[in-house]
Image (cartoon, rainbow, N blue to C red; front, side, top):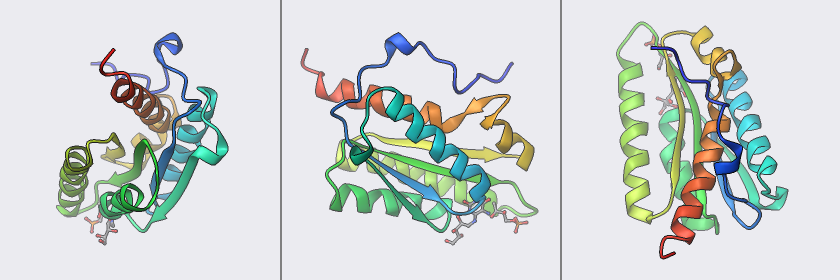
Length: 162
Ligand SMILES: Nc1c(NC[C@H](O)[C@H](O)[C@H](O)CO)[nH]c(=O)[nH]c1=O
Ligand SMILES: CC(=O)[C@@H](O)COP(=O)(O)O
């Protein structure tokens, strides 16, 4: 099955993010990739109306620390959604599996604990090229996808009773 282009979406389906507040937590591991994801997310949020002052970016050492960094945002900042951005690349051992499982379950737990969108913007790839392809390469930018998802989920919550 062809890989979806992560940056292709129906622009008309995305609400305005003008009054939305976002936290973005970025893993420093594979920083060439994760910084590209962060740039994609910030640019997409602003493309849909988010303001600079409503976009707060913080960094953690690795993807395994993303859920705690995201929880700091939920506890200490007034944000409507938190985007988690990381890149885990398979090595020689099963460490990859444990990081991916941890960040996945941690993100799910945060969504339900805080009743707030925590968006899973983590690349989990077999090699560096697959990561590059999804951080502004031939398959788009997962940061773009995460930003659009965040905007839609905040809008869903804010307008759920409509
Ligand atoms: N191998 C990768 C890591 N490893 C580091 C962990 O995320 C974590 O920081 C460490 O285990 C200490 O708790 N992190 C990534 O983001 N990407 C990798 O490919
Ligand atoms: C995903 C990882 O932690 C990985 O980069 C570590 O590499 P290795 O499994 O070869 O120790």
